[in-house]
Image (tube, rainbow, N blue to C red; front, side, top):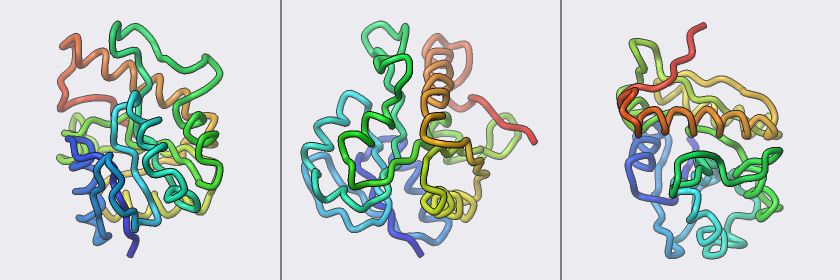
Length: 189
C-alpha cells in the first residue's frame, strides 16, 4: 500500500486520486498553501505556471519524495507552443529545482475523463511514464495497473519533452474542438 499526496484539487487531481484509490492505495489531497505531505509519491496536479509557487511553498518537504509531474508547459496566452527550452521539459526544470527528489513525468498525455472512464476510443487508458529511477517508475506502474489502467515505461526523464509535446498537441486539438475532452490518444499493442 502506497500513500500518494496530490497537490491540487481540480479535474486531473480528482481523476488521478480516483485511479490511486481504486487500486487500494491511499490518497491525500493538499492545497497550494502548504498542507502536510505524507505521501511517498507527490503528484503535482497544478497548471504549469503554478509549479514554481508550489515548489517554493513546499520546499524541503519534497526532498526524498517521488514527484510526478503531470504538467504541460504550453503558452496559455497563445496556445502556439511550449514555454520550456527546445532541449528541455517542465519535468527537467522541476528536477533541477528539487534536487533531493526523484521526478517522473506521467499522466500529462491523458485527459481527466479518460482516467475516470479508464478507456480511450474503446481501448484501455494508458499512462506513459518517463524517469531516471527504475524503482520509482515500477512503483507508479504498480499503482496505475492496480487502478485499472495500462502503463508503459517511456524511457528516461529526457523523454518528458516528447510526452509534453504529445500532451500539447492533444490539448490544442481538444481546445479547437477537433477531438473531445473525453477522447485523446490511445496506445494499441
